[in-house]
Amino acid sequence: MDGSQITLDDLSNAPDLDTLTERLAAKGMTPGWIPREQPILWPEPSTDFTPAHWKWGECRAAMDGAGKLIGTDLAERRNLILRNPVEGNDVATARTLVNAYQTILPGEEARSHRHAPHALRVILESEGAWSVVNGDKHPMNTGDIVLTPGWCWHGHGHDGQDQAYWLDGLDVPMVHLMEPMFVEEHPDGMEPIEKTTSDSPYRFTWDMTQSKLDKATPDPDGFFGRRIAYDTSDSMPTIGIYVQRWDAGFQARPYRCAANFVYCVMQGEGRSVIDGETVDWSFGDTFVVPMWKRVEHSASQDSVLFSMTDEHVMRFCKYWRFEALD
Ligand code: 1HN
Image 1 (tube, protein in one colour):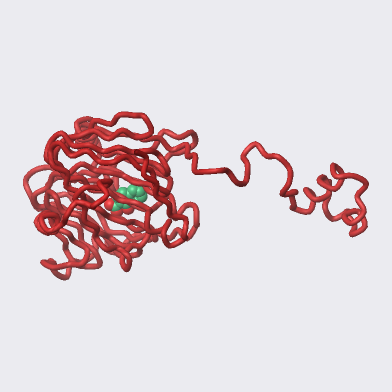
Image 2 (tube, rainbow, N blue to C red):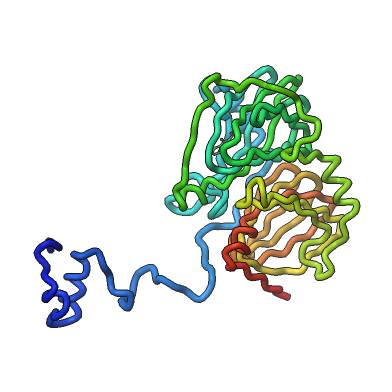
């Protein structure tokens, strides 16, 4: 029906609901009361995102394969995106987050760009790789966590001897949803390096994480174990960071919460049962705990896990909920 033909009288005096609905459709309206294939509201979160798991051995081998076949001249970022196997999804690892494993060869440079999405890296194997963030060269050595907040120029390079590997984490899917996407290539290719930082708010070294963990006490309720948070509220408020240290034999209480989590194993081995699916994790693995899925973590060896989450967004929006499940 051509909406421009519809008069005020057609709208105010439709003979029946079906006719009114048709006329509404032509005017860009839909009744809120009709049943829908996808309802507007539902009783509790029921995401299609799955508790996916990527194993380090396979991902590292694939990065080695990519390292032989493509250089950073062609692949500005030689990264492997961890796509959650949801129909129609090509990017997101969890609903609001994307993760990728990235590798760089000694002597290579991955030129600088900047974009609206916030990004971070968890360094899995590196001696001598670096990220330049707004002109400051940030060393990226094994165990470091390096931030590149939105719209900061960033490029990567490698002065060491051995291929370097890390996990990237960004809020790209959230930017896709909200649509404030901007991206720009640096006019010089690799941005000029002004200095090497020794003390940057964007770099959390392995030693820094360990000494914070040494001082942390396990949460009294037993859900998270010994866990520290890095404060990203000023730099990148969409991505919260926790690092947890679970000793061999640690068994967490099961819970579910209204936030998405991606974990990356920095040390050790253990098992997380997520929505009935068992994830046996070890060094370098990445796994996802989607929104409102029951999770029960345990460690069989002394372990350190990085995690990133949209929890703070949920809290800011006042959507946050947490439920014990034992
Ligand atoms: C990105 O810009 C980087 O700059 C890494 O290193 C991973 C994944 C998706 C979109 C942009 C980087 C990325 C990315």
